[in-house]
Image (cartoon, rainbow, N blue to C red; front, side, top):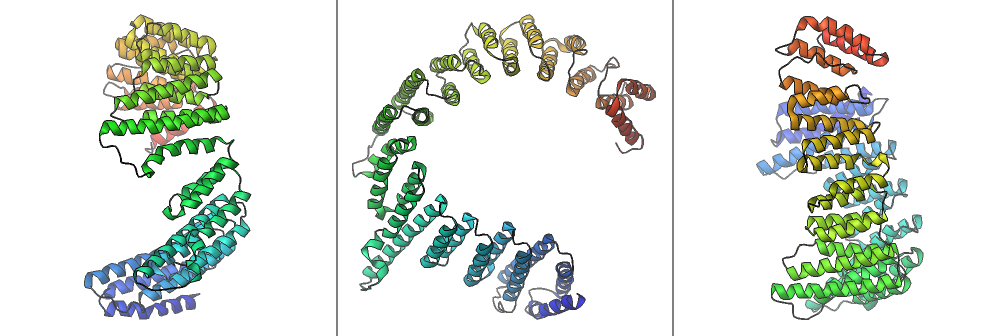
Length: 586
């Protein structure tokens, strides 16, 4: 192995001598490079190989290449690149080849190889890397697309890109993404040919070439791909994705119309088709040659007309397809337009009216999901339409009586509306909801009561909640109760609440720590606690040692009290922590 490493170091000497001779590196730096290179060579030549060693080797060489570039720029020297940079690049490629041969399945390693070749190697070399990678990872469509895009956009080879897509489709005959990108590539190819032909015509050059036939220039190859793909991949979503690609190319108007007509014919029963057709109305006016409205008011009126046309299509859609999915598309569109900012009061009013009208119709048919009721309520609340938000919330709780979130939103609307019936509605919610989902409502009730009612009323809410909420949820409630007690009544109130709850399991470490903090703020002794957690006992002992009013001599007594209270694993953990503390590690 030593001979191999020595030979590889000697192979570097020519480039290193050039680096020193032309003044890019000093003699000391060259010696440092040789030492580092020897270490890296040893790691990738030993019997047991690790991928990280190869990655470190490559990264070092890349850093060296970038440093050489910077120093060349600084001194303005651009010669001897074949003897220096090309030698390093060739060496790095050899390391990548060894690594990718050993760890063939590592896609990230292959991609790093590709990135390196894009920056430092020739296009021919990168083409070979893609071929080697695809031979192993032919089951990954994304890699085929990456290779084809590079051939098309960097090598400017439409034919190579086409061959790659055709090979990829043999491996993945039902991959929608491949068909979509192949379709895009053929349209890009047609657009490139059209520009070339225009340039030749401007130069008055008569060039006859089979690629410049009228069919190809109109995108006939893309049309063939479209026809083949939609016969294999069904569904309006794929159809719409191809139409979206076609619309990026102005010369493909005929193809766009054909795809659009097929969409309406083949997928008339798909909500996505109706949704696309309706939203298309927003763009139709801007595509015509009509004079654009000049004033802001005229623009708002024009936008209103477009939205009316969209809604007319949606109205027809929900009559033809009265399904939850179709109504979801309609309501989603209305909400999008409603939440869109506008300075026009006329437009805002129209959008609100359309949104509420469509909601009422969908609600009557019971064709809206719980999620859409929530979205609508939140949107209306954000824009301070409290009356409309309450209408939706009432309808939502009638339909989804067992949804805690829906009741919470309804109560939020009532609180913001300053309704006098809030307490009554909280009680009504608890009648319909399961106890397991009531915790957020109890907390909301207590928070509302703290701001709107007396201390006695708020405490009554907390006490009711503690009777109703059991198990782990009660821990959160106790913490909230203790916080409220300290905020509203100070230390004495907090201590009274703590004493009333300290025997009521379950509770958390935070519950006790809160009270300790309140005690510390009072600068009084807090020896009265009954601790059930090892961390609390440790905190207690630390406080006795460090607090200005603490008594360090009580440490031993506290330790034995803790051992009496703690059991099992908690006791063992406490002993271990105490031992670490004694030896100075804690």
